[in-house]
Image 1 (tube, rainbow over the protein chains, first blue to last red):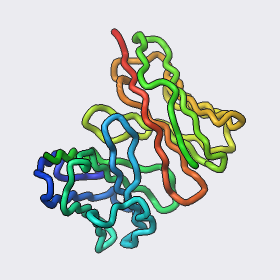
Image 2 (spheres, chains in turn green, cyan; image 1 turned 30 degrees about the vertical axis):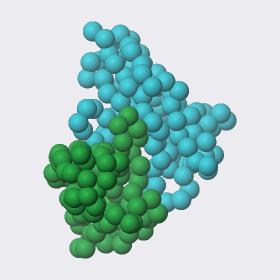
Image 3 (tube, chains in turn cyan, blue; image 1 turned 90 degrees about the vertical axis):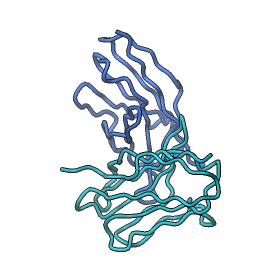
Image 4 (cartoon, each protein chain N blue to C red; image 1 turned 120 degrees about the vertical axis):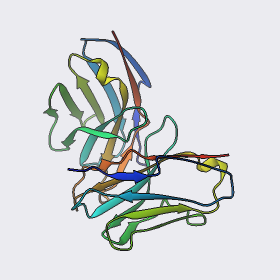
Length: 113
Length: 112
């Protein structure tokens, strides 16, 4: 079974530039999560999708962050414009509906200079 | 508020010895707990989980203990191996849906 796929793995951009991350969850996993992980810390939830619906985006900084999951499968997380403080690893995870166990992708390491 | 934290940020252990990683949580309504292992450059990997109606669960070389009285969770790794070197996170799922709250992580270093 293929795991959660994320791309790119690494991204370096200058501040004020836009950036996008892509995630393809495990087949059959209707629930998709985006997390941000700062160095030395645990992941923090940004947004959770049930199919194509964002059911929890309370932690998403909506002034510069946006996400979509148009067909209820893969998802894109965007930052525009990026700030220095956005440097982090952005993790995508997926799970079966109403299952607590989440499977994580390898993450995208973002560096904003 | 809800929080999950760890007592020890770094644990050095001799290869072959047992490791114990501790975690405290504050949300007494949490009904599910999970341990993840994260190696450098990779995403968190599921190790073992436990529901609040249990106090112990065993897997292959790992055991999770839950003490609801003092809101404490621990992960025991038997016969620690070099491949166990990683950062370990505990996480809890409060009563509000599939939302995991992660602690800050403990780094385990296995010495040969």
